Length: 87
Image 1 (cartoon, one colour):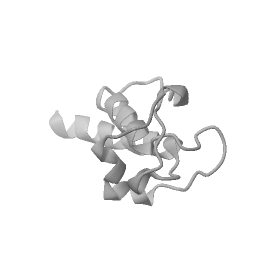
Image 2 (spheres, rainbow, N blue to C red):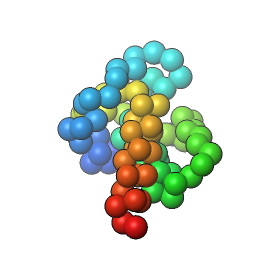
Image 3 (spheres, rainbow, N blue to C red):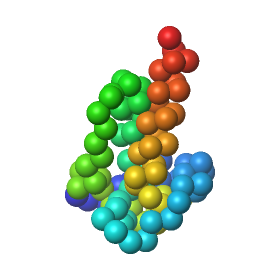
Image 4 (cartoon, one colour):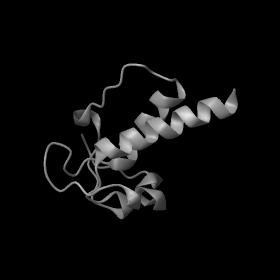
């Protein structure tokens, strides 16, 4: 996968995610992970899976060294929350 150039790399709230400088998620774009989680949450998916191999890499902005696992989880929560607000 390539390098992420999307604007979410600079979203300030992603700075609150835990650091991840090791392991399988290293250098994966936490912004992309957040968006995937948000989409799953908005659909209220009951089976969750984050495919880290599908995420591009990112070393820029607020997502630098942030956990894609935590980003996905936060995105899922925010997506579920938004789904209930739309109902």
